[in-house]
Amino acid sequence: MKELDKLKEWIASSSNIVFFGGAGVSTESNIPDFRSIDGLYHTEYEYPPEKILSHSFYLKNRKEFFRFYKNKMLFPDALPNPAHEKLAELEKCGRVKAVITQNIDGLHQMAGSRNVMELHGSVHRNYCEVCDRFYSMKEILEQEMPPRCSCGGFVKPDVVLYEESLNQETIRKTVDFISKAEVLMIGGTSLAVYPAAGLIDYYQGNKLILINKTKTLRDVQADLALYGNIGEILGEC
Image (cartoon, rainbow, N blue to C red; front, side, top):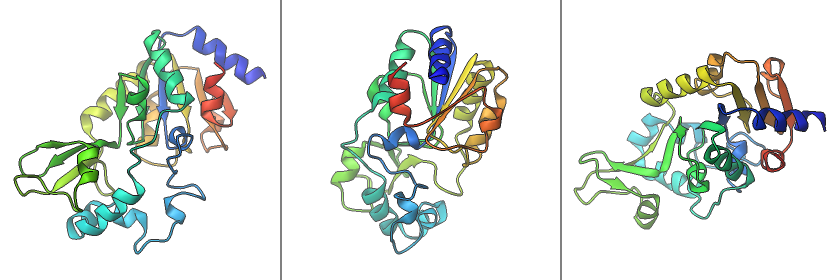
């Protein structure tokens, strides 16, 4: 396969690869994609997911928010797949400089990646809104919903909800990595979610790689496009 050979060549010859990933990186770990046919947007619930996962809904109806969050967003038994493992391996050998992810599951870190920019936060970090005490995902799962701190305050997941802004320091670091990258590898995303998807416009190089199950609106910009399961493709590199 000519495209796969070129992918291998670019990976082997670069020491400044930045990876930008979306939900498709985690679906191979059995975490559903919000926008897939089998994803959360096609399941029946009292409210649409985008409403439940909004900041205003969280403030008005914490109990319903956490019922959905616990049932549909937390996957404590999920494990890294070959895509996560390959990226961690490439970071360890000095080829991947950063992993930028739209996912909130922490699987990149579980696989061994150290320099991970989490654009939308993480389910593994939860903080009391009153005293800032930290709670792990395990502690959240053990509580009645909505979870409360020992001080009495509500505990909020450190995830970016609809109507909330992305963390500006994370954005700054992400822009810096992307703008300086020799190779920008984008995987498992349709690049339809903004503002996160717009960050790839800061890339200034000529080795833009897209790996996705289906075509995206950005394929015309790619210097190399491969279609299929990202775990299988990276696993061959």
